[in-house]
Length: 239
Ligand SMILES: C[S@@+](CC[C@H](N)C(=O)[O-])C[C@H]1O[C@@H](n2cnc3c(N)ncnc32)[C@H](O)[C@@H]1O
Image (tube, protein in one colour):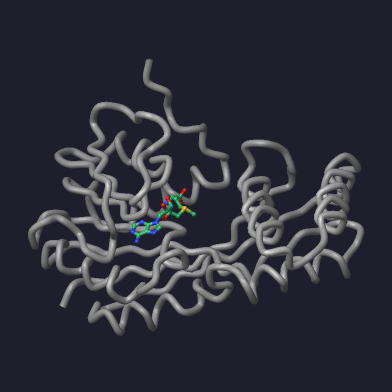
């Protein structure tokens, strides 16, 4: 049996639909670098006509549908010839790679001259959680942003694109907001990423992390919860 990727939270589904609509027509050949569980690919599969490929160093834990080719590999050294795709996208991946400019150069190389390279990254330093303990929340977010993958990746993305030689760069800042804190929500997942990272690094105590989660749950139970995050979307063209 082939498991499908987990369902997209509504907040992300709307965002991805907007992202995929950046090209004038539905792309024929799409590459997702750092495809992860393949959630963008599954959504794109409803529109992409010819070739749908995801690359990630990690083997996907599940099998997506048969329209999607999954390649195990490094986005900094793409195993594709030039002009192989007309829409090359990464979401939430730039901050995890050693050399994001190389990844973007590679994205430009495999993209057709009239195609688009699109980046989509959360600027972690813009996360907002409405919950009871502001001081604790601030401390945890700051610890993550200052030690984590790259808390400022969103705001850095346009200059990384420029350095990679992309041109005609459009920058969009989109705010994703949620009012629910429960499994399946984007913010629930973001909290998990932050929690795991800080636990592994022992940068805040286990008690503080538990208190933070309890605080978020309590705010959600009272209907007071709000999450927002700035996603920086850059759209560039290969030179
Ligand atoms: C936070 S996940 C994002 C997954 C997916 N794009 C999403 O938005 O749900 C980051 C992904 O980047 C992948 N990754 C890390 N280093 C990479 C590299 N050098 N090249 C391509 N992907 C990489 C990870 O394996 C992981 O799947």
